[in-house]
Length: 339
Length: 292
Image 1 (tube, one colour):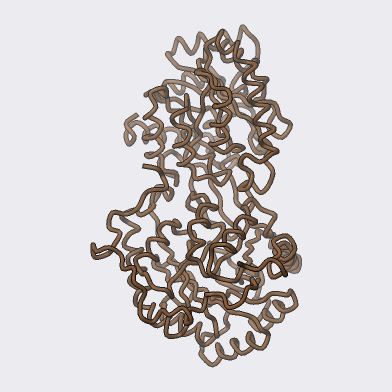
Image 2 (cartoon, one colour; image 1 turned 90 degrees about the vertical axis):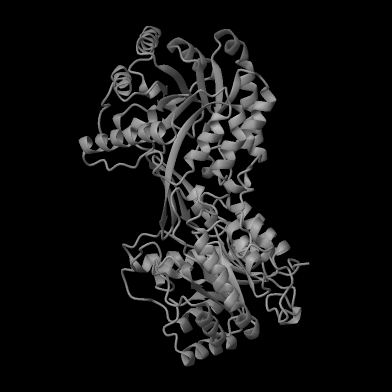
């Protein structure tokens, strides 16, 4: 068997073939991610500003200083940088109180910024994020005026990770995800918000496809992270190609390989400076995906010795990434429209 | 199937090439002959070694190496790379030189690293025009060395080092198309070039003569991730699947354990102990889990 052919025997949870009939509430005009115009928009994943204290803590990182930007200041920065929106998580929002969320949503709308809400189901109880319930997440997104909720699973994978695709220890988490997404699908449809399951550092692209096939709901799609497949020794370009047809959003991220005496490091860079084929990634998304947004994500390993310098370099990286997206990939430029 | 060791496994002992700019902060800790005794003690059956393992570089020394390996019933494989200013020069030779050294020490296989210089982004560089130029040069150099290969009987094994996609190695082999020229599989290296490492093993296994049987652990970081050396079976590579694929080729009768540990270097004794302990655990995994 080819390494890419592996697929679980129980392709349906109850042993029946997957249902291929769309639910009644899935008329195309209710699906928010079908592009209403031809323009590709450019936004920012807030992890790009994690040294500014914006976004969820990840991989044990502790910010050595206070948060440097409010959500509203973040929007001002986005406008200044010429961005069209934000992909933001619950760690960005100062409060999850509905009245505050509506205020945030109004500010984004006033600045003509799209919002996407990024949350984790945290099935492995890693303590990622604040909100873990999909229905709660949909309510948050609704209050924000976000039309997409990205969900991560956070599956605890057995070692070796590379040999664990559809592993028996992983399947219960995938099945639990199917169950939760099936439950949340009708609410997502009624709110006009699409759920997007991410190939986070915890999952193979084929596992995401399997979950989506099981859920089989038009408001349950995928979020591509262009780098994450590397975390589980999957070819990242293959993962992008696998997920692009079902992805309504993305984390458009680049990283650079550095050889070390003990293996190698894959370190964050500005988009276009690393070793992921970002031109091909964009082409796949533009051609195959139903979405009309690119969310830049950067993850810089900047020295923390000098706060002001760290913050400056983080912003510089975002600016450089925007420049690459606008001027090399022509995102949002005339003539680059999706056909 | 015989079980041997790639000498990089003991690089903290000073018996392998300096890779990725590493400088050993102490003098070499073991001679080649001591290393042969040591691996015999551990029950290993051979060495896959590079020029850094030698204490001298002359014919009389090579003859002693050959005899010492014979006396201990150890197979030897010689590991070198093509000349390139972009990589560590201490293990580089012209192809004919490398074959001659291999022959002199009684090695029946010599592994060759291509030392390609890849354009960025790496993921977009498979069969890139800049790479094709270099691959064509490799074909020429290896083809020119074929008379010596035939004369000595030393088989050449081109490695998917951190610089090459498995399909590029296969392309080179197809161009050369000689029964004494095959592949050396490294079980981790595919991922250096964004290739699924098991796909690389699958692709190369039918053409392989030898291997670097290596595991790495994946560690998440706020700025990305690292693949870092681990004892075999303790990392995140699918070593069972790799072994299944490798053993399907009857031409491959050896597994060469390779370790690339990140040991602290503030206490030499402790470092050497960590390295040796990981080697022992790797041998145990190969013998008792994989049944090699």
